[in-house]
Length: 161
Figure 1 (tube, rainbow, N blue to C red):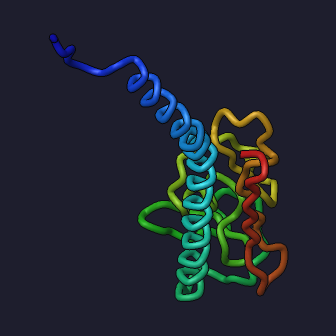
Figure 2: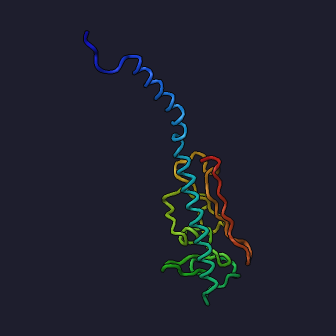
């Protein structure tokens, strides 16, 4: 009698069923990595903004030419400090909510994010990852201080990422 080599049909079906059950449990764990990546990017951006705001305020405190109680102005050269050779505009010693303020201080490339309220006259700016359908539900908002002695508010929203 000749014995056949290889797998039987039953063995192959059992292996396929086991792989299908394993993939049914494993696939959902890895399917939503895009959301996790967007949240991680915003959390990294949040850390960069907090650090840049602290460094800017410390630099203003230690500079003779900077007054942290000075009211922010919309003049490009008024109320600013030089960090790493670049001018950063200030609001009460902290970076303004503009590309020449917090984005400059934190070295954030505005082309990497969707910007909301970005102008030299607004008091807050929001950044969202590009391609988000509802940017207000997946964003990082920086609000500059509105009085001397107060600090900026940085709010992370990740419900719609």
